[in-house]
Every structure is written in C-alpha cells, then in structure tokens.
Image (cartoon, rainbow, N blue to C red; front, side, top):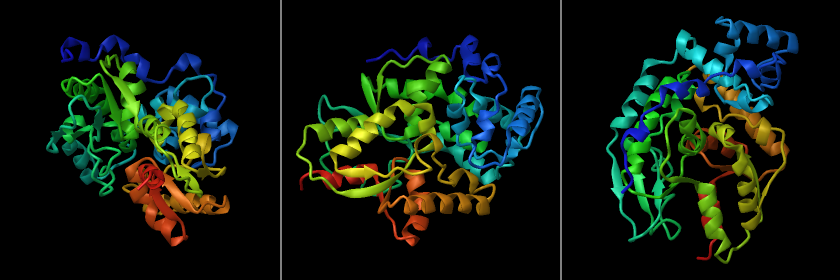
Length: 344
C-alpha cells in the first residue's frame, strides 16, 4: 500500500510555479493575437497584457473562453492563461451563474465506488464522467480492470472553465491521496482533465504523484498493438479537449492509434495548436457565442472532408453531437472507434 501521508500536502513555497511567469513575458502579444475568439491586433494585445500584469481588467478577461490555448501559443513559456484565470477569479468578471458553481462544489460529494477487477488487474479512474456516454466501458477492453468512480476521484480541473483555479490547487492533494490509497502503482485516466492534473499540474502545485499516470490513449494503443485489427476506413475530424493544452506531447500517440485502426484524422484549420473549444464553457455565460463556436468547428470539419467527429472528452461529445449530426456528421468517442476496429 502506498503511503498517503505528508507527501501529499501542497508545498506552499512551490505555488508560484502555477502562476504567470512575468520574467518570461516579452509582451510580444502572440497569446492574444493568435486567440481564435477575439479580434486583437498586436498593439492592442500588448496594451491588454500590460494592463493584466499591472492588475487591471482589460477586455480579454471577460471575452476569454478559458480554452487554455494561449499557454500553448506562448513560445517563451510565460503561461499567460494562468494570469488570466487568476484575475478572473479575483474579479469574478465571468459572472458564472450560481447553479453552475454549486454543481462543481457538489461534485466531490457524489458517491464513490471502487469496482474491483481481476486479481492483479490495472486501475482505471473515471472521475465523475464515466457514465456520461452509456456503455462506453462495457466489453473486453475494460472487463478485467479495477475502476474508480465518483467524487473521491474528481479532479476539479473543470473549475478553470468557471474562471477559478484555486479549487484545482486546493483539491489536488486530496484527489491524489484518494487514488493512492488504492495501492495502484499505475493508474489509467479516462478524463483528459484528470490526466492533465496528474501529469503536469499537480507537480506544479508541489504535490508528489506516487503512481504512474497513464492516459487512456496510451492504454488503447497498447491494446490495439496486440490485437488483430479491422481497419475502419473512416475520415474523422478530431475534437481536441481544452485540457490537452497541458499535455500536447501525447498527440503523437493519438496519431499512431488512429493509423493503426484505419482512421484518417483529416487536416483542418481548427486542430492541434489551433483547435477550437467545443463551446461548452461558454454555455452558462453566452449561449449565442457558444453556438457560433460549435458551428464554426463543425463547418471546419465538413470543409476538411470529414465523415465523422471523433472525441476524447465526453463533455465535448455531448456538447457537439447534435450540431455535428445536423450537418450530416457521425459522432464517435475514441473508445467506440477502437471497439469497432476490434474483432467481434
């Protein structure tokens, strides 16, 4: 059994790692100029950054979609989104409806369950989102795994989309400890947010991870490599989760997985570095803007010749599926595609 003691307490002296790194910012403005949701020239971008750094409230605070892309746009590693979300939390500028914040406050209270798998089996953490797509974890891909479900395993990363990062930092040590109590030496994470927390964010918060985090893509790739596959011959537009901005290196594994199951990830404007958010974070604040983002995304997929949308995040799946279906696109979660490629 893994020790769950003092090593999980957030080290306060390391908390500065999680914030904007002013010394790395040269005010080039790329973070806002490249943002696909605002119309901001370089001079305006520099002006707004200067205001942010000085503790001001420039327009970007309210216009921000909270997609985290600007951290990836910044080649200097200054992490401008960390500054934006910090100021959003300080000012409350996003004005998130109380019902949405209450929902997130209640997530840790959701009843938790450890569903034991075969003796010596690997462990899969489903956070609180494992049941959003019915039947996804049924079948031989997952039958032998031990599964963690419920509020004890809620990663809190979604708070970022409500313009708040303190709950993520304050909750990190607890969720790590809860998972560590299972004694698992490695844990597969279905939710991209959870993997982001375990692979990068928690370490930045000063929380030690006593198990190896494994992304669901890595697990699926391992299984596909030892199985006879029926290539699917499908052209998909991939919907990248916002949380993937924290762990972009795994994109190579995803490309390999698509290749092995015979799925073409169509090149399109809004993928990889310039991927669009699914629009879900905007729904509580501005439904019209959220719908424009969805339609722009699906239109881009159609223009690229996709037959279907492929998703990793279950919330992206639920949020985009109707707009995609209306445009004639099929909707598949990544796990569904792998299941389809496996022998019957």
